Amino acid sequence: MTKSMGIHLEDVHFGYPARSVLQGVDVTVRPGELTALIGLNGCGKSTLLRLAAGLLQPNQGRVLLGGDDLAGLSRRATAARVALLHQSAPAVPGMTVRHLVRQGRYAARGPLGMLREGDDPVVRRALRDVGVEQWADRDVDALSGGERQRVRLAMALAQDTRVLLLDEPTTYLDLHHQLDVMQTVVRLREERELTVVMVLHDLAHAARFAERIVALRDGRVVADGTPKEVVTPGLLADVLNVAGRVGRDPEGGWPVCYPDHPLPALEYENQFH
Ligand SMILES: Nc1ncnc2c1ncn2[C@@H]1O[C@H](COP(=O)(O)OP(=O)(O)OP(=O)(O)O)[C@@H](O)[C@H]1O
Image (tube, rainbow, N blue to C red; front, side, top):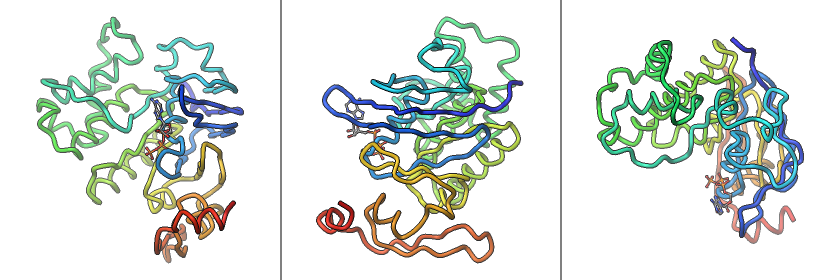
């Protein structure tokens, strides 16, 4: 087994044809670290994950994975290192859960790659990891939104990479399964020395489970540190545009947010610009 890998984004600029999104982003995710990426809708979080997964290329700057520039790695070599759970996925008519999770194995082999004998245990393990093995023969289309989300997490795990990028992995999940997924990711990161970056809208999860929080605003990194360092009323206002208070969990010590009200755009602009 290869050891865990860090991710470096160095002065990354990126824009879609009509829109500049990331402007000089520098982020270092240390090997084996669990980092939460937070920020308002449209600030560039998913774009950053797609760049880190090699699905987009920076207009300027570099993305390094385990010290290697992604620009020099083949699609297959990249897929062997990094798995991305997308925010949304196209419908998959007529595909069973097992079949979908198997797609994770193909990612590192290319579309014509043959599944090897050792692949099935990896698929079974991924199904078990997120507790969905009982649905293996069900149609993905016949699952609820939350069930499908967990199956897609199993597909990302089946890629068996050292780096896991999860774009809002708890979307659609009830509170029980949100906590279950967060704890599963924390456990797998420890057991398998994974490097994990998760986009999270729930600051409570980020503050409790992440070792580090990186906050984006308007395509720039505006905060980067441990939850205790960065989760403050100023972060709530400046990054998430809400007024609120921050306390401490009496047992765990992690920051707990008490969001109060959304800041009007005008007040927000006046306060921080
Ligand atoms: N394929 C695309 N073509 C053009 N613009 C895009 C494309 N994908 C995203 N954008 C735009 O780029 C900006 C950043 O999008 P991105 O998906 O990275 O935001 P995000 O922070 O992940 O948002 P959310 O929290 O809503 O998921 C947005 O303004 C979005 O409209």
